[in-house]
Length: 94
Image 1 (tube, rainbow, N blue to C red):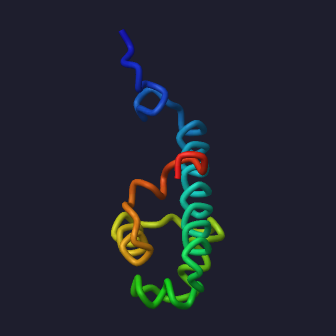
Image 2 (cartoon, rainbow, N blue to C red):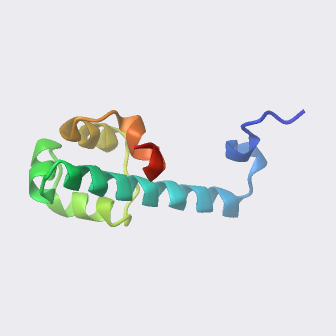
């Protein structure tokens, strides 16, 4: 029997499906970081300083141009005052 989480389990996904999922998550994180930052009336410069990131790196994260590490995601979430998990949620669950 295949467990109910199988669609997310890499061993039952082909490379194209994994790439598609990774791209979707990258875009979601990018959108959520930007949405939360704007909701808190923060500039990219302020957030990057508080998260100890180069401003250009934050710009690339918000544009969905780079894969963000968990360490960087934790720093961004901390600077935004949210739990890192919230940055993975679909917008309607924020």
